[in-house]
Length: 398
Image (cartoon, rainbow, N blue to C red; front, side):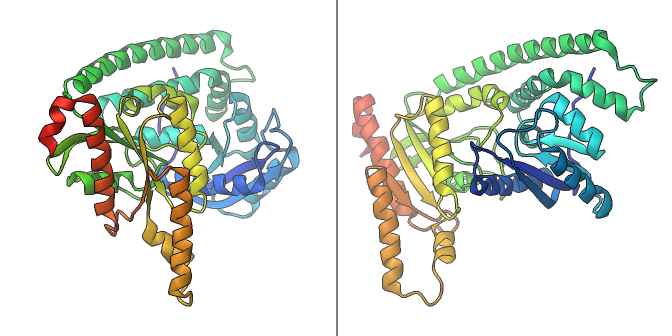
């Protein structure tokens, strides 16, 4: 039986690898590799070098071409950098991992495996742990054959014979049984969670959504006046946190949810559907955007696409452009005149007011900038829904 364990040890030195293809430009790849480096850092690895190559499509044997693989191999062997890990930005098949490791003699993983590793280290509750374990087994299943050969090499092997189809099929059956068991366990947990949500009563429900590391948890703490874990790392929040909040005698439930990311593994999305039910069942969404990020529009679109896939795109939404203090610090230099600064800010706000039909607020959670306007915007939305949905209760909230 294959045992799952953490792929990354603290402070492992890593190389990142990605491709420029007809579907992915060089600018996009650079952004993805930057994000991959942040993911690696979150997992505990230190990136020392990135490699990229232009190909029409990935090589079926080794993902990158033969010459590029040789270049990576030379860097590992001759630069004396003590590289312990190679991370590819796209999913690898079991045979690709096998072929790459055979050439490089270094542990090789892909973006999906890295994200799964981070989720496994962050999971705290029974629900999150079960969701991650299910996703891990679903990731392992189609790669079992390559993993068997990997284990054979690690152990030195006996002669030239592999473990044989019998052992592989045994493992495959065990993994399938485990997946079935975890799905049943998750269904039971989901049933309990659904019951808990139904018992919350007739409250308007508001959910914070957004790309990972945009400041949702910091805003959650600020709006709910309670301590919520926040950290400058990707996926600091896995489990949904819900608090009862009261603005001017008007109560509602506020939830913080797991952050979205590009190229999120399909198995992880499937496993975390129950956590994302909080988004599906929300009455109002607060879409938090890190406006200081160079690719914030791309991140915003990734979240909107994910919300559409969840069937939540049409919900009443307030877009919160967070980290305005950082945006101004990075956009304006000390010699820029105040009138020009005001004009740039006005253009930014006018553009997104038009895009969101005035359903947006510009804030800084860390500096508590413009929070009063945000609170009032949320309050107006919540009261409007109470009037429509629970008119007999609305009169008590004024």
